[in-house]
Image (cartoon, rainbow, N blue to C red; front, side, top):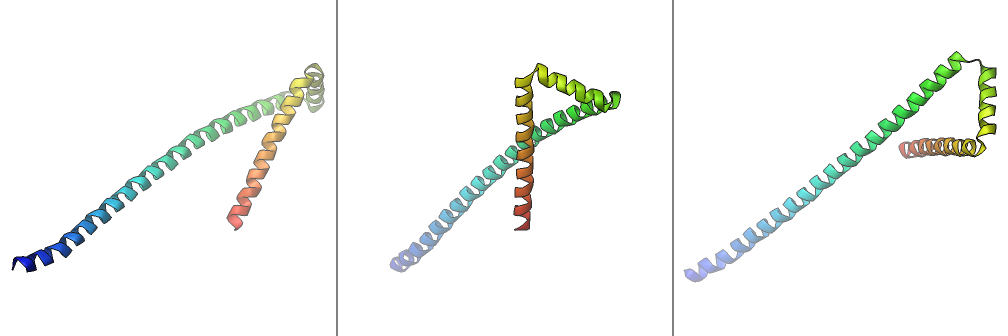
Length: 119
C-alpha cells in the first residue's frame, strides 16, 4: 500500500510544484506589467506638464504680440522691427533660427502624426 501511495504522491507533488511555479511566474509578470504601466503614466504626466508650460508661454507671447499690434499700426511695427534687427543682428538671427526650428519641429510632428494615424 505504501508503494502505491508513494507512486500517487509523486505525480501529485509534481503537479503541485508545477502549479506553484506557474503562479510565481504569473505573479512576477503581473508585477513587471504594473511597474511598466506606472512608468508610462509617469512619463505622460511629465510630458504633459512640459507641453502645458510651453503652450502657456507661447499663448502669453502671442497675447502680448496681439496687444502690441492692436496698440500700434502696422507701419510702425515693421519700422520698430527693422530697428531692432539693425540694433541686435545676432540676436535676431538666433531668434529667427529658433522660430524656424520650432516651426519645422511642429510641421514634422504633424506630418508624422498623420502618417501614423493613416496606417
